[in-house]
Image (tube, rainbow, N blue to C red; front, side, top):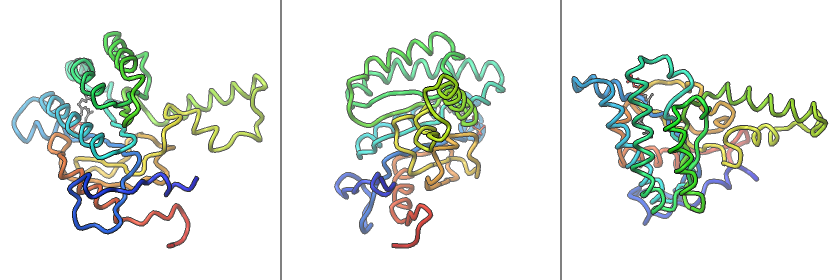
Length: 256
Ligand code: FPP
């Protein structure tokens, strides 16, 4: 299926994106939520206050994306490299994730949001793993927007894991080398079954991918804002969606 078919018609009544001609919505938005520490520093607060405020932004953006009809939202919450941070910050982040899942579950359920995670769950504290499992269980019959939290996620690690899975299939005689193709690789990744991101948003101004969804973002439109994640709001989201709708996606082809 051509990727452009994954971009659905955007109804003006669904959002405040006024004045655009033939607007379209990305099916899948992925966000690198950066700048929590800088937000806190600017306000003379401890770094962890930035993460706590960042959690409020997560709530706002999840609700808004679900309301306007986004199919999939993937949020980079904790990278496999973030373990290098000081222990008190790691403890805070893990507690925040746990309390987010406990507090937000009723809202996710009420909004019919499907829930999943990507990343190596087995290295997370048991209490976080339990809340992830419980959230997946409670949202398992939901049919609306997919919310995927990338926790202890690293794009290179994900590719290594996929190569190991595929090599095992070949070794056991269940797959021939000539049948290894893009679709086999895509379906061996953590994101199997999800459309690739159409729009990748990064906050706090850095022009980096930071090991996020390396395979999946091949043709994503990248949108970077100087706003830190705690300051990211619905109007910033609409700005990104407006820019996205005005871009021409050619997927390596020519202008139509
Ligand atoms: C990057 O900011 C942010 C993170 C490493 C953590 C992201 C976490 C949240 C948004 C809150 C928790 C989310 C949920 C779903 C509960 P940074 O600390 O690297 O900021 P800096 O670059 O300004 O230091």
